[in-house]
Image (cartoon, rainbow, N blue to C red):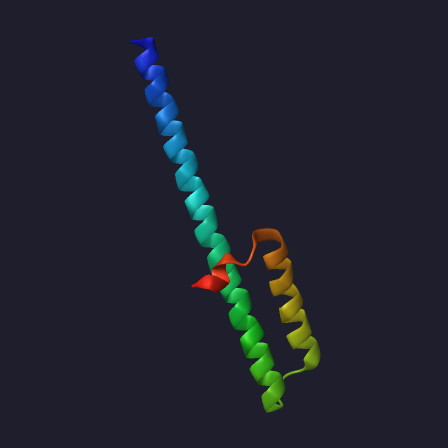
Length: 77
């Protein structure tokens, strides 16, 4: 009986860890998409005359930092 309960506990813990990992992946993808959108908005504002090169540079730096930590998987759709 104890072996069954131990296996059930291990399976439940494994499922919980997989769920947490998936949630983290979704949050990282969402954050990457938000940074990409901010870069696009900064670039558009700069090109249309209402933004600055510094804002575009800052948005690009934030996106590159995110990619360095979490990878660029969010760019693949």
